[in-house]
Image 1 (tube, rainbow, N blue to C red):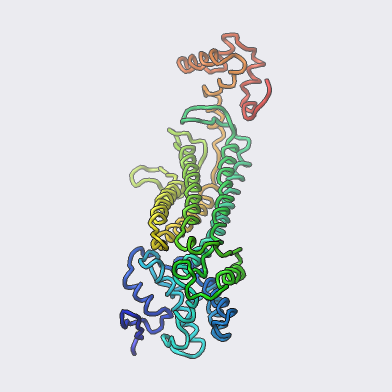
Image 2: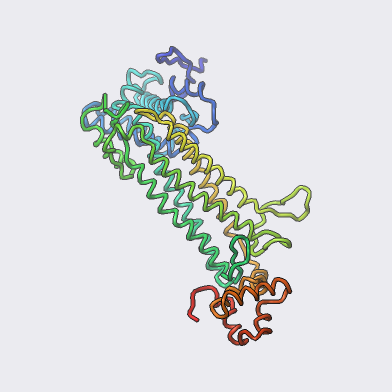
Amino acid sequence: MENFRKESDLLGELNVPLNAYYGVQTQRAINNFKISGQLLSSYPQFIRGLAFVKKAAAKTNYELGLLNENMYFNIAEVCDEIINGELHEQFPVDMIQGGAGTSINMNANEVIANRVLEKIGKNKGQYEFCSPNDHVNLSQSTNDAYPTAIKMGLLQMNATLVEKLEKIVEAFREKGREFSDVIKMGRTQLQDAVPMTLGQEFEAFAATLEEDISKLNNNASLFVEVNMGATAIGTGLNAPIGYAALCAKNLAQISGFPVVSAPDLVEATPDTGSYVIYSSSMKRLAVKLSKICNDLRLLSSGPRAGLFEINLPPMQPGSSIMPGKVNPVIPEVVNQVCFKIFGNDLTVTFAAEAGQLQLNVMEPVLSHAIMENIHFLCNALDTLREKCVAGITANREVCLNMVKHSIGIVTALNPYIGYKHSTEIAKEALETGKSVYNLVLEKGILSQEKLDEILDPRNMLKPHNR
C-alpha cells in the first residue's frame, strides 16, 4: 500500500506521508531545517497561538463576506480542536528556520485545511475544497499572522512563568518566617558585617524575586498590540477595509487577552521591541535567581570548612572519589539555567537588530530564544522550590556562635565610643584573639550593663534610638 501522497507547490511535486495533516510546504521545511531538534510541537502555547490567529482571521473574513458560513464554521471547529490540544504532533517544523516563519505559518494552514477536508469527507490534499492559502490564510501574510501567533504564545507562557515565580516567592517567604529567630552574621564583600536573622535573609530573597512579577507582566502587556491586517509589509494589500481592527477585536474575544491593532502597521511589522524588553525582564530575573543560588551554595558550604549556616536537602552523592561528599546540585543547575538565559537574551538582541527595511526575518530564532528561556525558567523555578528551598534547615548554633565571635559586632559601638576607638578595639581583638566584649570591659570604656544592652544581637537587627 502506498504510504505517501503527492502534493505540489511552485518548486514541483513532493511526497508527503499519507496520514499527515501537514502538506508539501511543511514537508519541505522538515527536509530543509534539521537544526535545533526543538520542534514547533515542543511549544503547545505557540501552537494554540496559531490556532487563535487562524480562528480570528476566519471569523473576520466571514463577517466581512469573504468566507461562506460552512467554511468558517469548519475552520473554527478545527482551530478549537488545536486549542484544546489535538493535532499538536502534526507541527514537526524546527523552531529555527529560514523564511521568516513562512514554514510555521504554512504548517498551521495545511493542518487546518487537511483536517477540514477530512471533516467534509474529502481526501487530504484536495485543496480545491479547502485551501491552505486561499481559505485558511485568507487576508493574511506570514508577516502578520506569524508574529501575532508568537505574541499569543508568549502571553500564555508568561502567565505560567509568573505562576511559578509566585510559588517560589511564597516558599522563600515561608522560610523567612521559619527562620525569623535565627540570629546570624550578615556579610559584605565576604567579610563579617553586622548581625541579622536568617529569616531576614530569606525574606530578602522573596522580596527581590517578587519585584519581577510586575516587571514580567508589564513587559508582556506589550504583546497585546498586533499587526493583523498588515499582510506583507504593513500596507494591508489583499486585506479588506476594516479587517485590521475587526480581526484584533475577534482575536481578543477568542484568546481572552486584550488584543488591539497597532496604530501604524508599517512600523509594527518589522518592529521587535516588545520581544527585546520582555527578554530583558527574564534576564533580570535570571540575574537575581543566580545570585540567590550563589548565596545558598555559600551559606551551605562545609560542613566543616565552610560557613555551614544552612543545610540543603541532600539530593545525590557528590563524588566518585570522596566518600560522604554531598554537593549543592540544585542551585548549581539553576545557575547554569541562568547562564543560558543570559546567552539567549543576547541572541534576542542580535536578532532584533538584524531586521532590515519592512521585515525582520530573524524572528524564528528570536522567538525560539524567548520561548526556550521561559521553558527553562519554569522548570528551574519548580526544581529549586521543590528540591531545595522547601527542605532547607538552619544550623542555629553555628549561626549564633559566629555572631558571638565576630569582630563585626564592634560596629554597634560606633555611636557610643566613636569610630576611632571602635577601630582600635577591632584591631586588638583580631591580633589577640580576645572578644570585643571583654576588651571593652578591660579598658573600662563602658559598663557591663550598657555593653550588654548594645551588643545584644537582637538590638542590632533594626533601627533604634540611643
